[in-house]
Length: 189
Image (cartoon, rainbow, N blue to C red):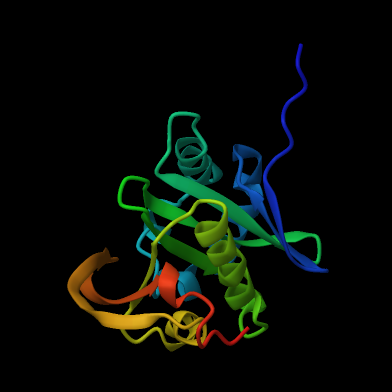
């Protein structure tokens, strides 16, 4: 029997890396979701649907399935502990574009973890995947999250009205983009 291939791992900093998510990460991720539920629920529509470890496991099973070519999801590991999720969604190889989505444990906020993780994924998207366009969508009013694409040199293209159903209402999303030709120009790392 052939040994399993090592999981894709992307170094970010000495104490920070991204590792391809697997179903084995479900308990750690669900623990964060459940512990930080009031905080995360403000901006993430999936929180109310994550009521047990099995819900998180089902999501990870879907995004890591061999036939799924539209998602590439990583756990964020800081100081040897899983503290969030980041990845590519809506990978469109024909048009060479994708979206980066992310969330981070409340106690890890404000440390530059997500900005550095996004920078690493930008390197991967434009370098390894040869993408031309990367988008990040952020809930209007989520200042912490919108600071990330701004600091990374993204352009605010506009607001997608009622872009997402959040808990019991629709809310608007800021749409940011970065093109391959702009990559590196004005980036604050």
